[in-house]
Length: 449
Image (cartoon, rainbow, N blue to C red; front, side, top):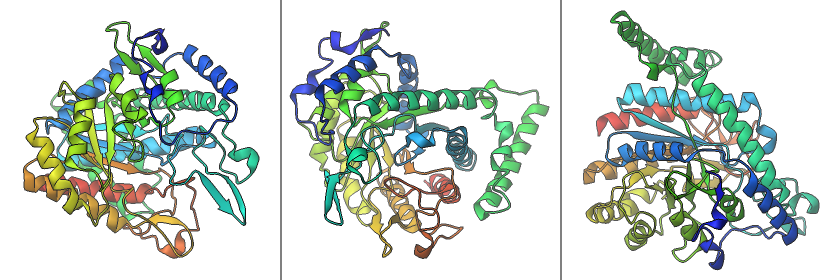
């Protein structure tokens, strides 16, 4: 996979189309230099791994597996440390164990990790005390500090994103194949957590059951290699098209294009214009593609997206990630699912219960109620149960740290607690306790389907 996509017919067709949410780079020559350098860098992931994830998502689309996709709202360059990465991975491994064991379903594990450094924003500028500056668009574009220097888009940050993603992926691969993800570690993932949290105690009880099952299998002479490592894939929003395009390569096996910045990329609610550059870019690559669908999405929109992104009707190619809000999911989702199913397309339906449920607390913090998150997931399951279709998974913003960004949960956080550890650069995330609470509740819903 050494040929750059620029040399491949059709690899750059998005450039002639309107591209929403792109940075206003002040120095175009510096941008061109950075893109040329990125084009020479080795891939972060390999085409065969993307194909493997597409097969796993095909099982999700057919109703044979469940997708757990989660991670930071926006990754930060100063959080590429072993502790932060391990804590995120540990939370996802624990959630995966809960869903697999309590839900009795194979779980495909995909992180919002190793590339989620860019964020779409509702406004291009931000004003404070009469000073107006460009809005923060993620560490890949500019800095969080409210100064002219930090907020000026800097293409050098795209190279930092590549190197931060490479460092993160390197550690994730080591953790998932080097023994840390062995199911026999099911207690070790919880050691720092069990005494301090009700969800940690509930998880520990499940871990004991898993232990007994493993011991039984071992006594019977069964010790599968699959228990010793875990498949874990990376994903992010394909937002800054200069970066994604620079990391698009031609697969030497097939001649197909792959975006080798991550195994799976998705198009956001703000960038899924049917005549836009993001859709055109995604239509040219062979990675599994996700599309966020908000409450304004029509059935016609969904069917057009299928025509553009999945013309071969290949299970696993296209994932619809619905983000309707708890108050709209039961009203808006049924028609989409009905008409897409009637068309014969097999897409994976995933619930993002985070983005439609954000509000501003009196303190000024953006937050989400855990009850609203849970209610949207409930509505998602109810709709699929009513239609006889498969609720394919959840897509959540979470962290492995003990933050106070979303209110509620078993280890309840109140609005007055938000200031204590409000650490996100953009949107509020579930902490580890809330994430485990959600996993147990989703497993129960899945069993009831």
